[in-house]
Amino acid sequence: MKNEIIITAQGHQGTLERMQNEFSALKLWEAPDRDAALKAAAPRLRALAHFGHSRVDSKLMDALPKLELIANFGVGVDQIDLEAAKQRHIIVTNTPDVLNDCVADTAIALVLNTLRKFPQSEAYLRSGYWPTRGPYPLATSVGGKTLGILGLGRIGEAIAKRALAFGMQIRYHNRHKKNVPYAYDANPVALAKNSHVLLIVTPGGAGTAKLVNAKVLDALGPQGYVVNVARGSVVDEPVLLRYLREKKIAGAGLDVFEHEPKVPAEFYALDNAVLFPHVASATIETRKAMGDLQVENLHLHFAGKPVKTRVV
Ligand code: 8YV
Image (cartoon, rainbow, N blue to C red):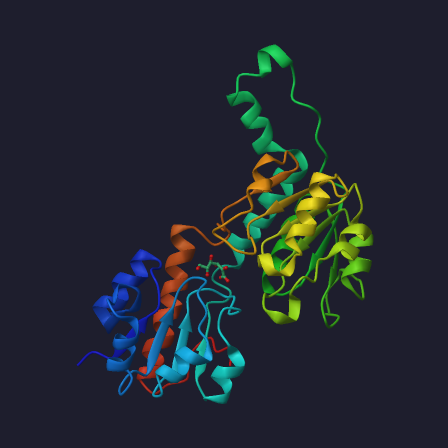
């Protein structure tokens, strides 16, 4: 008999197909009555596969008293109440490392696009302005600039390696100084002050909420840029929007937003912002690798073995 799982939301197609083949999978978002579906599964259900941005909170955990494992698709687990999971002895897994390269590629793409304004210059060409208005205005060089990495974890280190190849200098801030050949700043304000580009790659959640606020943006100053591939929650978004509008910072490259997929419409009008719809890990290869790791954790747990990538 196949092991039973609940899938919380629509997710990566190939992974959903694997789950439906390899487990007896209940798709919670398709259940006509969610509460009734949870109630029916409650006496047996030991594992839950999570996709997307909805909360996995204590209420959901309490609805599934036999739950032993929450296997998340994604490295970030800010949408899962980890404390509640810990209290209930529920294991939480994520999908680290397999996405480092793609997320780092996206971060560098945002740095290049934001400083050089490539998307805006392409829009200029497509609008037919080139012959009539002349060359597109000059942009800002990347080489020689200082990249301040806020959150130098595994992805941050992959970004640093790439940025070095573009001739950037690297600084960073973490809660703890690391044994790396990059200059350390004791807090986000100091990092912003010493950087041309502040690149956010911290975890999300309460511990980093609005870490990049008016003080940090003031320290970055009118020549400074923000790039965010972490979570929208790490930035005070209304303040960022105002600083971009008032040119109190030079520009921003954003892959993530506070209430995504909803993006404040004021962003659309800004010429100094490059906006991506959370695509950092969105390649065929990486999404497959993330799903494979998520499924592997489920199988390991059902086989009574330790999971591969445990968070709590
Ligand atoms: C995905 C991510 O977009 O891994 C993460 O934390 O934010 C991304 O890789 C997300 O998990 C897909 O829902």
